[in-house]
Image: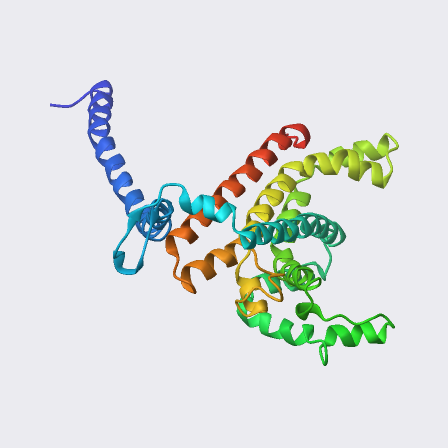
Length: 314
């Protein structure tokens, strides 16, 4: 018996309605399969350790769990009355106050200079990004030689310019700025690439309209480009702040893991590492880690509040 076109359409629709749930189910299984390795990694190496650290902060923990007792807030009180903790807190803030403005201004300036497409554009962008993809430990070895006060290249350049030389990492006053100088060289490439991407998305028609209205180059940059870049600038401020408050690898490598001289490069994360893995006071280190997390959260909330005043979304 021959089917009419209407009957064929109804039969095809009913067949699709039965196969679509099955197809969607398979899509869900495939998505879970792709997400499962990342979820297991985050669970095993991020969330579970974070929960363990949170719990350790409220106990007096000893190796192998022998004699572990409830401590309550005693570790937090001890951390807040520990002079080295506040010295590390001050060093962390100073390091962040050096890194945040220099990173934002440096990335914005370099990206503006090389934003114009040319034959050298890709080569310059690669050179700017290259330090970021190099290992911190490997490049720190070279920078330790450059910071050497006797035969380092930085003092050689200062002598050639007729300027006084510096002790760099051996000076309590110059050690932390030296680490910030290295960190700026190593990490600025990532921020420049992000800023280049944001600059490429600035509408040319808006800038041309401002030029037709008589706006100068500086006025176009300040009144048009900067407001359009404010979401990207806010993103870079957030990640630079978090990265500065969590600085560890470069400080550990350049100071030999000691945070010297005279605790000049001892930041909160380095102090937490020393307390946990050199002195084996895990619960005390966990309490300081929780305080660091609260500090990062506080800075993030303040920046989010300030962003409502100067971040403009299209």
